Amino acid sequence: MIGVREVTLVSAAILLTVCGLIFPLRTFQRTKRTRYFLFHLLFTGIVLGEVAILEKYKFVSGNIFTVGSLESPWVKMLVCILSLDLLSYFWHRLNHTWAFLFRWHKFHHQTEVMDPLAAYRFHPIEVFFGYQLRTAVIWILGFGANEISGFVLVYGLLNLFQHSNLRLPWQVDKFLSNIFVTPRIHHMHHLRDLSSQNSNYSTIFIFWDKLFRSYTAPGVIGENDIGLNWSDK
Image (cartoon, rainbow, N blue to C red; front, side, top):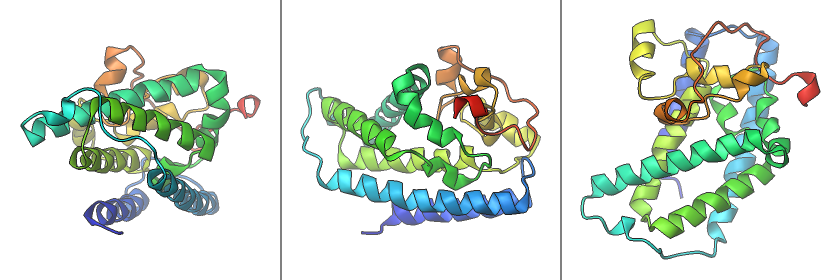
């Protein structure tokens, strides 16, 4: 069933794609950009289909702790977003530091063009493992449907945003990047340079990278600097 959350995410993907063409952070060759966008569109459908199947047949419910019983819905929502975003940070970092996981995660880094739908370019095996981990944590902490839905929306919007090729006005980018992950920050994570790939793991809040010393400040990125070195493929 298509709801407000789904419509919002689709609308955001379209808007970010168009704005990235009008105000590009960097220039990509047109044919190459189109080819990668269509490939990302294909994998968006594959990933969302897989998640829908995993959601239908998941076997855990209930909770162990009582986070979900906090009285204020806004506090519950904030705790859920912070907790799952922190989990996503460590899961992302683990995908880079453990060779077994990176064999699947490198599929995400093989893109040479950044666009919003690159946020869904993930190997189905990585999606499966990540889904099981998040489901287990949600079960342990006892988050409800409203908190989870809120997290999925915020996480999805920021994931689309950081993978987009949108160039923000400098002062806006500078202000937002004190709290959130902007395209200028996340594109550093997609550089061919391995030291840059092993940094900027955050999705929503940039302070996880700063807190755990994995932050790399944005720098100049050329058209051919995105992707993996052939030795890493």
